[in-house]
Image 1: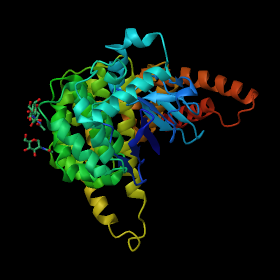
Image 2: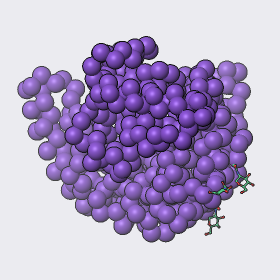
Image 3: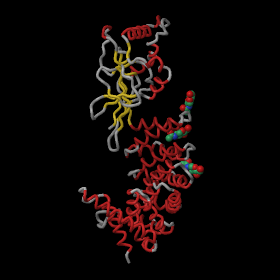
Image 4: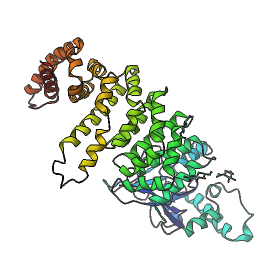
Length: 454
Ligand SMILES: *[C@@H]1O[C@H](CO)[C@@H](O)[C@H](O)[C@H]1NC(C)=O
Ligand SMILES: *[C@@H]1O[C@H](CO)[C@@H](O)[C@H](O)[C@H]1NC(C)=O
Ligand SMILES: *[C@@H]1O[C@H](CO)[C@@H](O)[C@H](O)[C@H]1NC(C)=O
């Protein structure tokens, strides 16, 4: 649970509290309290009660930075700071709120730079100013007071006081607010990116992802994929991928909203690598355990598009992700055909078998050249990439065996990798690791070589 509390005592006289964010993780139920909408000006203290005793000396004001800092007892922070309770340590931590980044960096930098506290004189003047504000007759006097002018207008303060009771905003309300902001033509790209970031966090909860659909938000996110700004494309794909992860209802809605076709088009057209990664993530999440989507993916040339991406990717990051995705699809189908052996226990088993039988994965793998593409990933220098390649090669063996056997460079790779990993496995054993990582890779190589023997 992430807990961010922005609490404040206004000018040591009045105080108000705003809890900014309490978000639950997947499976937690979440509460969120309305965000402090202003939060630029004013000295506030973290203490519940602070007396404005004239002789008490200066108030220690912590200067928030972009990093979280621990708040000491009695220290005050400027209003609008993000204050959170660290649940591990029980201590409060502070950093600059967004408004304050502007506050400190623009107008007030010069005057504030040299001090981090306010003298009783200044506070007294500020309080006097406030009393005058409360009294309409003296409104006009002394408007230029240097400290008081930094505090919030009285009307705003009254409004905040009216909200003194914590206002609980549900996740649905938050998402409504976020979607309205995302949908507004007034919002900047930066604001939209922030909205997507917050949505991505929220949709990890199954219920939230489903609410997103019923509120029309999924459509907005899918449209976001078509944005002309690649950062919006990337973040939209991220939200989409997270929303459909392990969430069958949302998977269905996403496919119905045309997400699969849009994602495929994105994969096929040139995109920055970071966009491709997130799009691939969204595709993989959309296809997982969803034979209907897999069938459409294949029939619309998905494996062809992926094979082009594979060929173009020199670094191997995308290659590995693609191969992992293929491996997942193959083993998922394999698993379905093995489980549910008792039809009485699993009534939907027949239906699932029927649906998976309509996914022509093997034929497509063969036809689109994957039997000779996946071995190329073994040329990578990354152990992790090689491991993923070996697992996929084994999973594809029933389809690709003939091609593997006639692939001279695959034989060569396996021989040299076997020597390499056996040696490294020896060193692992010397330092006391019985079933180490290198030994595991050596075994994968071995298993593949056994299959290749006639
Ligand atoms: C956009 O902003 C203007 C003023 O800033 C406001 O009048 C208008 O209602 C806003 N439009 C939307 C869609 O929020
Ligand atoms: C987005 O705004 C349009 C009008 O500008 C509205 O018709 C649509 O319902 C809004 N979508 C969402 C999800 O709020
Ligand atoms: C995205 O744009 C393509 C054409 O550029 C269009 O066919 C597709 O329907 C659009 N998708 C969405 C969700 O707007």
